[in-house]
Length: 471
Image (cartoon, rainbow, N blue to C red; front, top):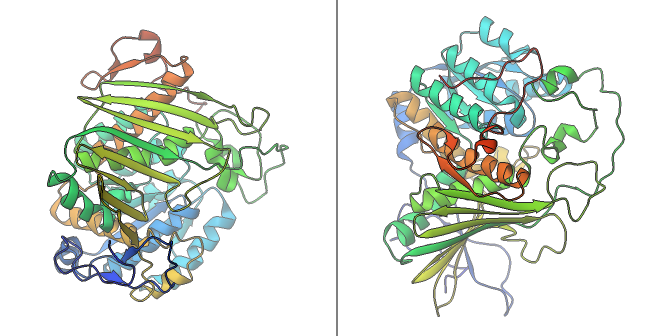
């Protein structure tokens, strides 16, 4: 069994010599786990550092992950990156982001601050735009940024309905833009290593079943009272194309608990796991999708997303499932949110911070991602940083920067974002239709067997915003 006391062997593919010791002493009943950091060398970083040209960047949405992404851009891009402009409808968040970016970037300049992304794109000549808004505000800014000449780093899921997602994909291809989607499992070192070692090599055997799941909630039991929006927030602009609804204080971070602004747990946590499984197994679109669930645990909650949901995605000779519940006990905090891949020879279970493999009848080989405070000390004090994911986010950002140089497709290209997001959205379409099985036609972007389902592929937009069309 791999020991937490041991470094990874020098023969490990892509992670040679990168083990990091854990500080905790092992109990007799405690599993032995190797803790591993990101590689010291990275071809994408090398290409960027050798051939990358100076770029001006802008950010739309400077909340939690908007800041996390721009800080990774500054870390990875170095002096070649100037964050020139920031935009957010929340003036308080915007000013804080301006101060923090100025502290971190080489020029020490405070970016120009905007409340309307359209003004930012019109006034600033930008090469790159990062988009970290709530999900319902992904499509319009992403398309506008591409049309303004930007390559885009876009948070997942890329949209809230299928037509939005398809329109972004078509726009990127029409304009030849590099678009990296923030599905960083594809850049997670422990997963990159596992893909090569166990899956691409065939060691796991033939895979016929994948289980993806998340067993935690988003305070869905809450009963909230509407409030008056604070003066520093343009709440009508925050709502944008979404329906006119009351303001709740929790929306600042808790908007994911409302279907008007996202797609619930399957669209938030599920899209990561489904995308990870598709990447690990080299899968495209499923043939059929079905889903059931509802608000069973907290039917009186003000939140509107399902607290219990299952979905099935049927591929050729393989079934992939998604399960989540926002109630009950979390039995395994290390892998409360994960993917399990079952092959004929062995089983892999993994998420963003852990990756375990076992041959049937043999012990688990267990690996954890490492904090990287030794190489990136600012990680230790950065507010809100997911420290175990920071290394993967850096690798993801270097991949984006390298593709800006060579104009290739990034590891989490917009098409992959389109497929993974749409699969999760279609699960919710099935749920809304009482569990109807949807046969998906990716060539014609429609459900083949259910005309009524096609009416749910685009959400109505609130005036004056206009829904993007597939070009």
